[in-house]
Image 1 (cartoon, rainbow, N blue to C red):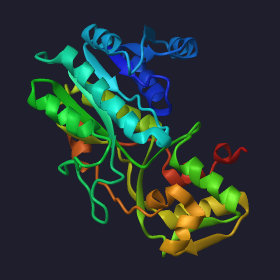
Image 2: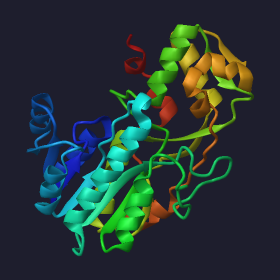
Image 3: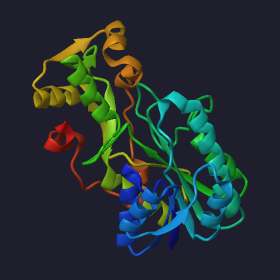
Image 4: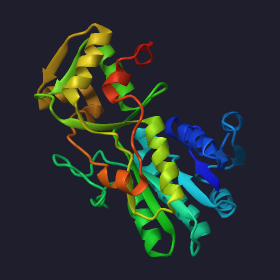
Length: 294
């Protein structure tokens, strides 16, 4: 297949590109800058110049493909609402180019706010009131004749080069001189290694987005306290419990995410795609020097 990938140079996106090429697919990666274009080329993919704002370019990349994987998202939380709207419009532009065909469009979402406190599954629909409406947009496109599917990523998609939630926790522990958890620390974070997650995108694409939702979840739920304990051990700082009120002072804006309890199943994804995670689990991966290089 000829696959058009947005976010091709990102932490997960670059793993997706490598996996696609290794499986024999031809990949075209969206690149906004010369630096991005060089990175796409280095991965072994062709370059398609454009951006999420350039809908003509997005439509062109999608139209020339046999399928699209949309992983690009601007993670500047100071402009979160604007970035969510940018994402919505980009998904619509990609879908417009694929409407009426059997060519799949796979978009990216998450599980962080899906079903707090209980085991979430692929059958759970995302709330439509949340600013990021990637899922709702894909669902609407599916109703309009686009073969759209969703890959949900866990709060931590980990591996060497990670710059997501876990590195943020490490930075906070360094700054505060303590690795903290909230209450008893038994709230659970699902997790997956980025290489394992990448294979879910490829397999969903190869299966023609036959299902609405796929979960790239290798571990259903790692207790947050265990994460904090590894960080504390590696940094040589105490591991401490914080009350909900104290958490705001310790974690700042990240307190909401530090306290989420979102165990998530991928049983249906595994059955549908024949996917089984092969890489390190979160705790083994976190206990590596590359996470703590200052």
